[in-house]
Length: 445
Ligand code: GAP
Image 1 (tube, protein in one colour):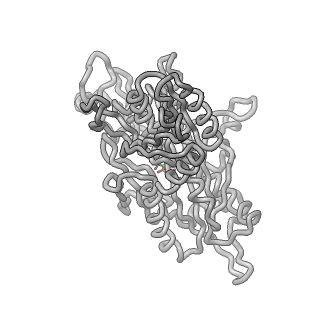
Image 2 (tube, rainbow, N blue to C red):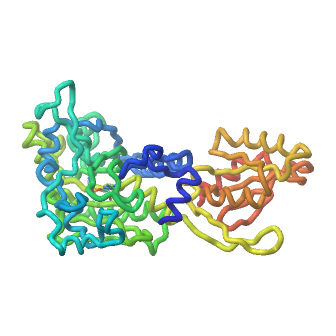
Image 3 (cartoon, rainbow, N blue to C red):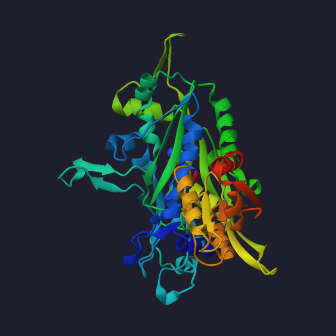
């Protein structure tokens, strides 16, 4: 993980939030390459969802009516048990003390469990993870609103709006990508558990009785999505929630887990939420959330199958999965270690690097022209500094799948060398069909 965090900073994937002020715990900024990778992850998800005839998109507000969070159960149940150290004032999740270290610099390297055994901790108290703020000029109990801790509720409350506007009938889904906020007690493992993050959630509304079939369908479909974007099969697994561990709303739930360097961790949850959400919103708002089927004249509260992925967690899983240190040949016949991000070409932030082999003989001018021709189609990076081998290494480390080099043969026949990041194989391609060649390669990858 340390190597990935350091590469992320060096190459402009992820920076600590407010770094010059010492950082803000649990918050991260995405740099020039990071923002592209994150957007590509979200774009692939959005495409996979909304290109279907049975899924509509939505973008709901982050701030919602406070009753939403009473109906959803978050005000009462979205809590973690927390203990405080009476001596150093550090705060821990009561169920994670075994993994935690003492917060005092005076006891560096000491396990928190030792402090607990010595009776330094308070009793456990429930701590609500929602961030509170105030709407309007008054800062009192009547103006409290919450930063949403999940995007899902914006979908539930809009179920009938979307259904009637789009004239969809169950089974159909509503997809949304957006920020969510949780005041996590212990943030940890880089982007894995943060206080501000993005979710990609899709809620699929089905007739009661059809829920188990759709649950199985979406569970399989969502794993396929990660595999289709090149994630290593052996590093993905399902984890079924035991009946006694199910969330208060769920009838069945599976996590898709990825094997991070620190162990297996959930990147997406697939939940059978039953009719819990719509029934609760009906109860709390006093408005019917039932669907009326014109043909069968039936009225029912749909069951919801939820697919809930973290965009930031998926980003991190794709980054970790792509990271390799490999032996590669050098120009003088030796070998060296190259760091390469084997990101799927659809996810790679920059698709093409363009280099003149040398900075003379008209090569830079031709290379600039090629860069200009590629730029409207793909993100491209022009590099003319240092030996060409070094330039390849820099692009390998940034995850760029293709590098185009203008050399002496280009001057003769207008062809260029296209070098592929993973195989390091090189092909000669005419400049007139370079864009088509790269597009095809990305498409079939
Ligand atoms: N609507 C259901 C829901 O929010 P969840 O399991 O709490 O379910 C879904 O969250 C996904 O959101 C997780 O699988 C994870 O990818 C992401 N996620 C949750 N909390 C997160 C956090 N503190 N930091 C980063 N990602 C988080």
